[in-house]
Image 1: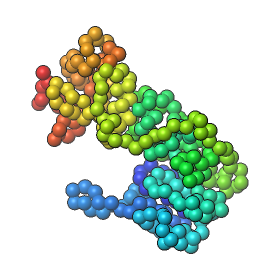
Image 2: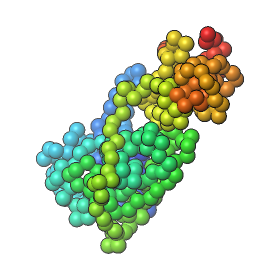
Image 3: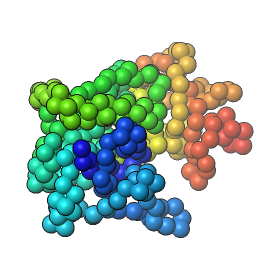
Image 4: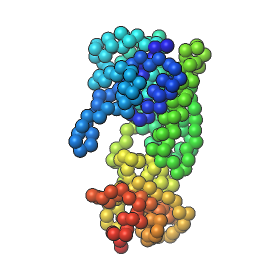
Length: 304
């Protein structure tokens, strides 16, 4: 079976690797154009491009798939199936209809829940206990296509977005290979989504960053672990503004007002939350400083 793979960031890498390792023929890879990064603004290849190049798979990087040029390339490649994993670009209708087996997408949620750009973040921000991966047929709507397969996984109460991201990438890669095999054998399932159960996972913004200590300790804990590494949470402590990267629930209780700094110890800075629970700030970053443990920051910058 002739497969064209479309993907860009780290999340898509395990899916491409698993397809190759399973012996499927990946004829070409489409990924986003190289972008300048770091101080030298040197053009760096996408993670998917690095893998494709290592396997000597032809790489295409069109700025858009809406042009005749991009469509003509795909026509010439004549794919039986297009696999998409975090590509970051919309596929026009004529491309969706091009492969005999259609276009399928690896989506990091249990659809129809969390359609959209940031499903992993919002699952954590909302305090969900479970998430997963869905392989679906792609349609013109946003993540509305028929579902082929799903795999669920529990979310650890202390798991960060980065940790869950990596787990879901591997889970999705394994499920993708099973799904592609089923499509090839004609044994794949297909069922429509229940739109009444859908919810949206919009892109993140800095408006989500400020911590409101009137919220419960658990809500703030979810906010911190759900916004790593960007945009990250922010908090004002004793007149200074910090980015907060790690907190933990202490199990302690206080009758002081929310936002009160009770003090600091060898583990971090203790602050009262809206439910009376005390939250400990473990890792932070002051303006102009590096990300570090709170206790290390306090050695040279005592808070009063």
